[in-house]
Image (cartoon, rainbow, N blue to C red; front, side):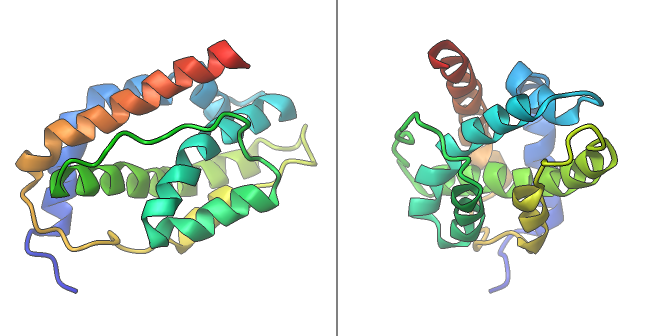
Length: 172
């Protein structure tokens, strides 16, 4: 189904408007593990367990995310923390959540390459989740709202991820 708004311009506007929060999330200790050149398997598993705590409820709402969630489940990297996503008040919330989660699959592709290069010390490291990210194609929904309408919601999604990362560290 063709987008009403151009995909590249739409995602570029959201990327620019969430850059600061995206950076905070990428540099959070739970996520920074994934980009480190030296890490251990337990830290890697903890990062994926955190990610699964958000992917699981997200996949209940959006069909396109279910294959990725199944990969996490097969790897037994399911979080013991059950969380509930905040309510989606309108279409902009739906698009914002999909933008952030879909965007994370693009980052997952880069992480797969990085981890493959630096996994020599961890032969048991599986990259199935990050490799599965490559199977997610173009933006999975009709973009029927301007990016400017979705920006506040996208910022809230990143803030939610950051909040959950903090909560995950407190409870583990």
